[in-house]
Image (cartoon, rainbow over all chains, first blue to last red; front, top):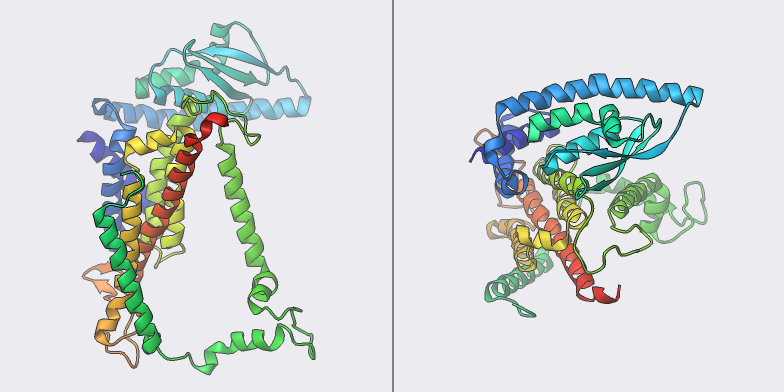
Length: 162
Length: 265
């Protein structure tokens, strides 16, 4: 039941944001659409609804602001400096991960790809390795690479999804 | 169900045909309403006078085919931009083809789909697309959009799931060919009913609001606190149903056909 309610609220907000209005008609149809969409998609998106807790939402929001304001800006400045100085040592390294859920893996991979300088080019779920193209290869050892590239992302991914 | 049509969909189809015939009858008897007054056909007059005017070539298009002249000359910008939009959309769709555009089939015979990152992301995005599409359809009489735009946007959701996961995943979710065909027919019947209802009041086909020379009082614009825009919302909802289901039918049929003779691919 919890997953239907959570998705209803999410879809309700998305619909109103898309409409850009809070007239009664929009609110009414937002509720209708959110009800239909959550009924159709709840089982597709949420397998274990016990995990939908406020604590995880808090970490998700905290991570969003940390990622956008700290990690993104730091990576942008670093790559901008490399573009100007030409100091690059590109290569592909293996980065291990220890999370189990697909959402956590997706969050880590997309966080790596979305910061300039690193791109996930492949994932091996059996060996639990992501192959990352790195603009400045500082290390070849997988666990040291993980320290540089994905440790913070993974810590938050565990708090949010595991 | 192989090769046959169920009894209920046969009934719906014959109902649709009957209603269409009734529509044609009333159209022939003058149900389309009167002609618009001369003052509002000025732009049509301009095009007829100028498109192949060999005596005064100031605004001519050099072609007696007025519709093509409008599309590629008088209103050409619109066509160019439409083409650009479609080009970009197809380019995005091609990015999702497994194995790339050279048609290299990876792991032929298996249904592994793309990496789990793409699978997870396409699940989430397809769910948001459903809300976006319904928003486009339901607000079609308030802001740009409508049933056709909403329906074709909705089709992105199953297309993403087919590309990211597999067509069998889609079928397991409940997207069945027979169900889609039924809903599409339901949408078409809805369109026919809404557009022919005014005929019962001696009105015109596809009449929305009250008009001179018609007894039809018009579809309600307000229903309590709800603003519905007369018949427009029903048209948009049924059009959404028709268009979205038609795209889904094409996608499922195409991918199933591809799998059916996929051994040689």
